[in-house]
Image (cartoon, rainbow over all chains, first blue to last red; front, side, top):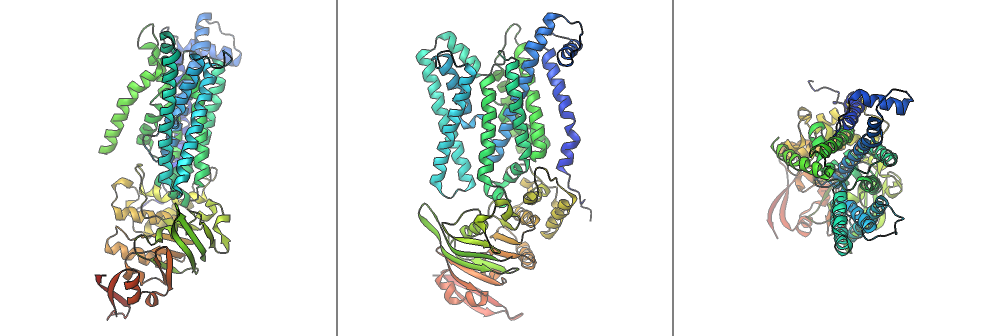
Length: 354
Length: 254
């Protein structure tokens, strides 16, 4: 028989290419640190890294060292974590809800984060004791909780518990919740914000990496790693949803707990990222589709590919946002959307044709 | 493996869809489920597969009640071929069939060559091995159905549930799938629309308005009275002059 007995082993495929991941990631991080208004040679970057991480004692310019260590590197690392997390959240939600338009903000997270941030920054909630990030995080979780309760109520009304209806209920609840919190945000801004505050908030809403420091890295890195590990651990469960929730159940997936756990995990990771850098759009929508197009929809390959592509894409977008207009930093969300929207259209058209 | 339903009740929004279903399918038997549209065949199969919990009564797999088992343990013994299950993912036939190994794999137990062999055998069984590398969205309805059956076979189930698996199939593949299913050394429960196909089952059950109104050997169950009463058709029943088996000729609807 001419049919090979060996399936093109997905595990083998992933392993063969996995070693590239850290190399590409490190290259992207170095690029993110080197490129900027003041270009810094790679050997200077390596020297500073050796000084900081290995206790070496190379002579480097103090200003260069400061830019590299305190400003650009931390920023690049957070951008990478953010890209990875948002893209993986997109993979998970698209797989579980069987909806190609699902993205990390579907569950009201960005809307809630905005409301929380605005409530702290503009309305003065917490009287200065709360930071903008904490306000955003609390807002994100609050909105997510409301969306989940809404979805649960809509779902239990159906009674049948059939997968399609459950996914539909979650999406509708997410839209309703997002609209509610967007309205609250607009209300607070209109009522109390000065023009300058409104401008600052808008900048934050589009995504802003300018304020990122090492303290943010210690939050972003564990969160992103947690997201990657959860997705890898559940890669087969995600595959099992290919033909919907009922089919997954018939292949032994405990649909409700697994789906609930994955959605909550991704919501938490997304909320952490949004609270650090604001709501960066399009990453969670475009990167998963682009990667499905390249490596297929098997999650053993899709999860590592998406994690890497998300990181590289956001580091690249950050570089562009800092260098496109000399002397001015664009909100990174502007870049991701400017690249993401046409890319998404292209994927859709090419996907239809093939 | 024996499959038993005891006093099953099931309702959605207060509308009863299944009422007091009692049923035992012996190991290795092929049990046909027939009945008009909306009589509860699909609902019953979903309960038997553990996808829905009955409002009352229980399903026994061997001697174990389904509700006491984990979904994964159920899936290691029971496979279900749904009536309509589709995807927009770009996925190959082989990878679809490989999904059937899900209940036997864990995050740490990787894919093995044994799994490969099971997948290929399942593809051979449904005559789809030559299309193993085709993408799902390029398949016809009948080919998709056969791939779904292969996916269920890759679960190596002891009990196989099929919801109208011959829909969309041309006559050759209808017969070959029925032949395959009958020869499998597992317990099979299959819902069918074609009553002449149902004649080939070991036993059949007739669903009507959520109740199992009759069950037994096909010849005893599918009488002219039953066809009139439950299916609303006038039919003549006579013996095939070639092999003497029972045939139905449907005349007209009531």
